[in-house]
Image 1 (spheres, one colour):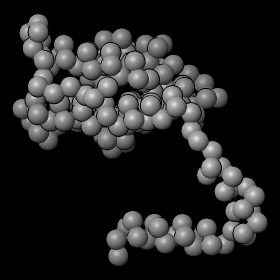
Image 2 (cartoon, rainbow, N blue to C red; image 1 turned 135 degrees about the vertical axis):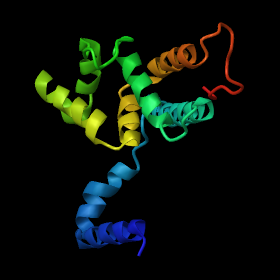
Image 3 (cartoon, helix red, strand yellow; image 1 turned 90 degrees about the horizontal axis):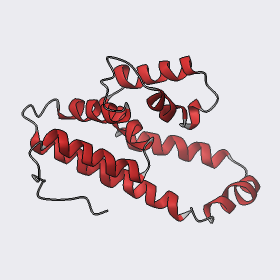
Length: 165
């Protein structure tokens, strides 16, 4: 059986065990709340820039098997103030990861352990997702400019397509 079907059935079973008054009083009211416009725009920006940057690296890579590793490396370098992470993590880099909800009350050492786990032990796409999610929309624009300078070093050379933002 398909994994998504199993997962859906699992959650459906749990949902069916919740008393109807709990659903009516505590869950349904939240489904009617609209999300803030800025949050919706940030989510759209995340997906647009993720897709665009992945396609940009795929289209311009020599080794199609490692384009995501290069993308992750370049995002890390951008977030680390253009200093390779193998040299050091800057305070701003660590601070970005401390903004994640799961790191909100953690020490610097614990945040560094989280960064280590994300960058070295997680699947590469999860690492890229995490990196992009700690950037806001304006920082993603700056990231794209940083990437253009790395991929297209000749002044004025730009890719054929631009993200829709």
